[in-house]
Image 1 (cartoon, rainbow, N blue to C red):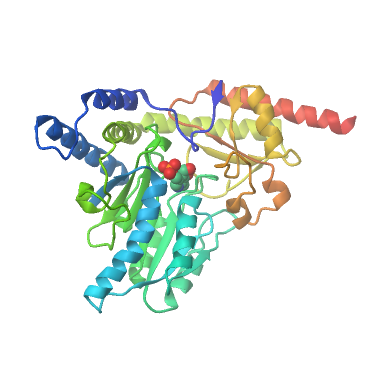
Image 2: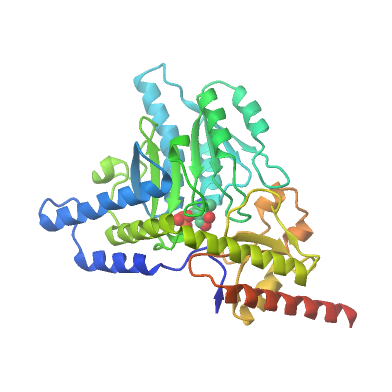
Length: 390
Ligand code: PLP
């Protein structure tokens, strides 16, 4: 079997599994003050350091969550409510009145942003366009930030999970700082692939299972002083910002994966080589194939492409029968392939977008995976040519 779906979830790294199962058998509640509790607390403190190193975060609070979706919900609603609380306590502190999200954000960010705008009076939401290469239009952001009163909250991902296109976070950060806006960066797809610098933003999201850690664990980095109101309330865990007993073994597995992902310079070179070989061979075998975002800086492991005239759903099934596991270029979180909002934002016609596929390589990918994928895609294309000729 050839697993080329690391952007959906990356298989558990052996280091992560070892750390996860060791901590699971160790047990202990990090809030208990006896020796077992203190050992559990030490696991969490060590994990904070390892995950913070991956995020390039120094003076940040790390809040462990059940994944990046929860971290995004906490950051967005927490920022809006937290700013309201600060405003209530000190009338000179501005409320958040405008949210700007890029049109290529993951639904984990888009959906809570939309819901907040619907539910919180006085908060407006605008989506920001991207270029045909899938890069945020920073001029549009600059203009948007100039208008309106109150504080703005901007959400832009470090790199897109569908196309791998890397976003100009430094420039976005500069524009936000100049305008006094808060910035949330979804670094889920970029983590472990490119260096991250959490000091450029106020909130950063990470997810363990995209870097070879366990599913159901994520982290939110919050800059010192950035507004944040708790969304899950209960016990006083994590400074009262996210109640509930920490997922100790999941956090330990996350830390081990973060350490391995950050360490892996050789691994990154190998992944980059595999992706490049895949694309070169794809274009040789199927010259009419289209690679999305190819002219923009992209993450090493991601290839989003289309075979014009072959619907994603058909291709997915054919490749699956050949033991090659890729994804549709569009999100399919519900098990159904829907048209990609990312490709639509890049101006890709629906007919072509509905043929999009994503091959994503990761820590355990090999050249045999590239070869199997090219063989299966070539076979699929030959079958289509034969059917058309008949
Ligand atoms: N952000 C991006 C860019 C993602 O790709 C994903 C997962 O697909 C998420 C957020 C949500 O992460 P999680 O699965 O940890 O909730």
